Each structure stands twice: as structure tokens, then as C-alpha cells.
Length: 111
Image (cartoon, rainbow, N blue to C red; front, side, top):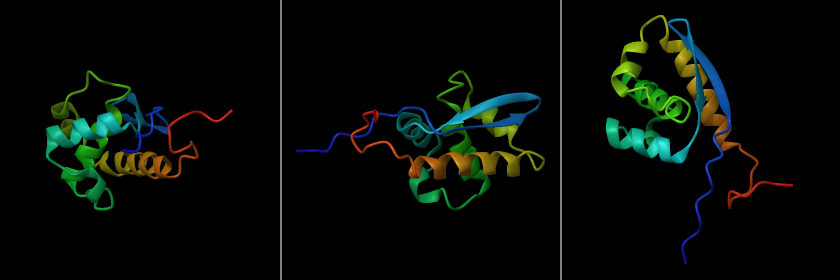
């Protein structure tokens, strides 16, 4: 019998401002899987290695739940020497917080 995967409650969240526009970042497994498929980057293995390719892929995964219209090409153009640190720190915060999410393993909400 396989274990049910947790429901993705689109939290934790953080924001980052790029080019005067605020983007909300959220961790969601489906978005991570889609970003891995589209970018070819295995995010679970590379999250601790902030290379340019990894930052692009992680940012793409975390931006998609709240900004599904944003393309990977647009994400790549947002990451510059001026923005990379703020983007990476926001992504790292969301990713780390998702690992510390206190919700139950079965994805149900606590009362």
C-alpha cells in the first residue's frame, strides 16, 4: 500500500520584487515537478547549490503557483546580477520553511 502524498496547501509564502513588480512565491509539489520537467533540473538534489541554472529553476517552480502565466523565459530574464541574491534568498526561505511545515504527513489541516 502506498502512502498518500501530502496535499499542497500553497504555503509557506514569501515575496520578491523584480522590476517594480511583486511576485509571491509558494512551495507546491506539482509546480516543482512541472519545473523539473520543463527545465531538466532535479530541484530536490540541487536546492543547496545556487548555480544560475538552479536559481532559475527554483524561482520558476516557486513563482508558478501564484503566477501561472509567467513563462520560464520570463523568469530567466528576471534574474540578473542585481536581482539574483534577493531572488535566491526568497526562494531559499520558502524552500526551507516548506521542510519545516508543521502540518500532518497526510496533508490534512490541524484543528
